[in-house]
Length: 321
Image (tube, rainbow, N blue to C red; front, side, top):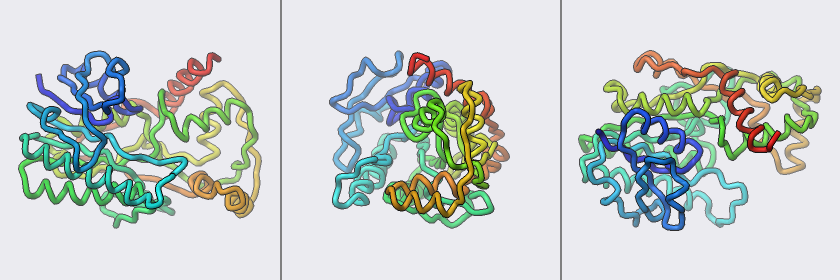
């Protein structure tokens, strides 16, 4: 039985990943903060206490005997940022903390580290062509800058050591348990709130959490994954209005869409301090996931329609519909 360490094991992606690996016979360790409750972890996961990610975290006890690390934990998007220097805080956790973990992993003979990165490393909109692994990165905010810098540090460490590195960049992840933007979309669509996006002509890539977990598992095991960077997605890019219509079908409610000129939507976003959200809903952000399909033989096991249905069922249970 091989041992794997999952950072962020108690998060949205981490819990589903842990269930999958346990089912397949892995000995799974999951990191937890000192103030977390071990009882909230997936049954079968062995929790290990780690101080908040940073250069002072002690990893020796967590990494002893570990074959593979999947690094999910990060300082993610902060809704109400209070730091005077957000980039410094993101770098402390996502860049320096990740580098420190990798060096500790090398010292304990970890075979492979799979790093969860983000499409934001390439930018916040892709224009008329999807991003590929060969495009020049253009990180656009403190979170994506810190992730890009972490990728570079990890690659440098991997070239100096025998540890194998795999970088996975994902677009927006949806599925049961999603605490972020997709949950807000579900609430808005279910309430029947009219949305002014009927005339938006963009394309967006998404990945269902079960598909992402399957891709991560493939990156853990496949020999050809070593040293590679992969984009992953459902492979079913949709426009904003099409996403809303599909979500409405999954929820069993009508999609209430109407047309407003795009310039007016952007003006409203600027006046209401929701410009970033408007950009995400009106611009194209797509990725080409053909590399992982071609080189590792991976394909998403769940269609977007199935993923949306499972997400809708979770939402109905959550809200007692």
